[in-house]
Length: 139
Image (cartoon, rainbow, N blue to C red; front, side, top):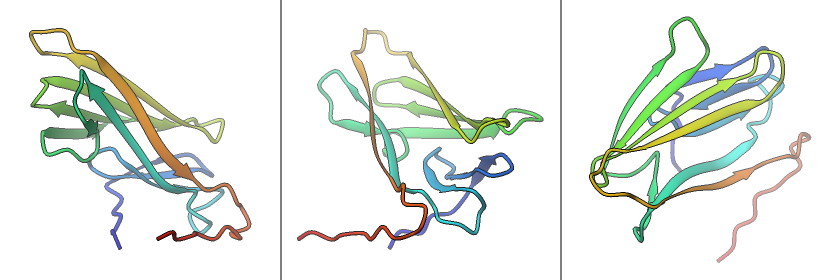
């Protein structure tokens, strides 16, 4: 089983989100941290021209830099794909007034030629607040 370590946490009074140093969401806790985690996985990726999927949080060609914006609960993760010379800036925060996660992505083509970039999201969230949902295994 994969261990998920929180390298960064964003949130408000009720909603807490744990992220890795590469910007991957690994936990969403609501209404408090002792309650159920509402995410199975959340994978973001890009498809450049006719390439395979480049997962933003897990690609050997990516270099990462992460920091909180000073005096805020806003987390900025910069992802640079060295193969395509593509810079991706991910900004994550939780609204202070509503229990909403806000994620913003900015893509910058630093390559000499134009790139056809498609943004992809593959996620599985859990919505059963009473913890009755059971995971199924298929073979």
